[in-house]
Image 1 (cartoon, rainbow, N blue to C red):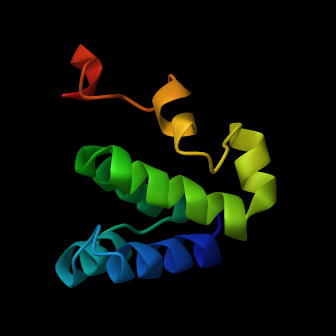
Image 2 (cartoon, rainbow, N blue to C red):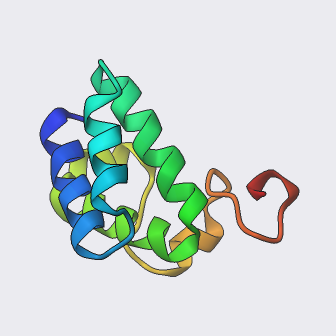
Length: 95
């Protein structure tokens, strides 16, 4: 995920109230590399639940089709539930 995608996604997650300003700033400024920012961002989104994951996936599908295709993502709501990489509340790994 590139810096532009991360910044755009952070803005989207702030606008949709998935993240607050403090969480967004922490991800931006406490992680030195793009990889670290991506990891922190995705960890935060997963902890927020299925709706947050859906917003994240939809943004990636709309704004970075190459990344979405590489990750096998679909903007359909069912994609969050069907993707084994996304933990759900019913699985022990998702807690």
